[in-house]
Image (cartoon, rainbow, N blue to C red; front, side, top):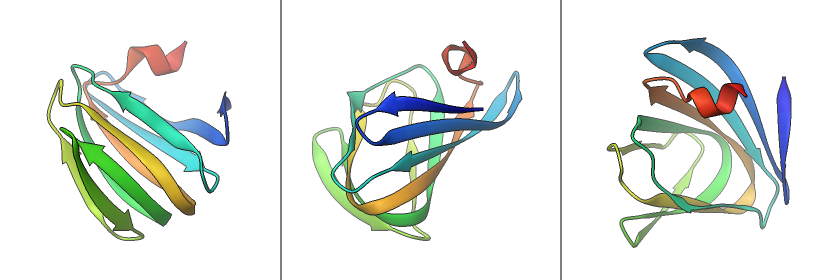
Length: 99
């Protein structure tokens, strides 16, 4: 099921086990994911588009085919430069995404 997060961002849980979850997050140009942190390890693969990620206060531009990894509790967020989608993997699963 696709969840509309507002402001041009949608999220779809693709698969989920207790210790691993895959999520597709789609962004319209100009939308963003506010800076946040969580106790989950996260890996992100850029499926399409271009994004400016801020990780621990430093900006990194990424586009289709690039990957990022976030440690548990590491602050991160992104701004969508060109419409696109991300594939996020979380360990353990984000139970808050299932509600």
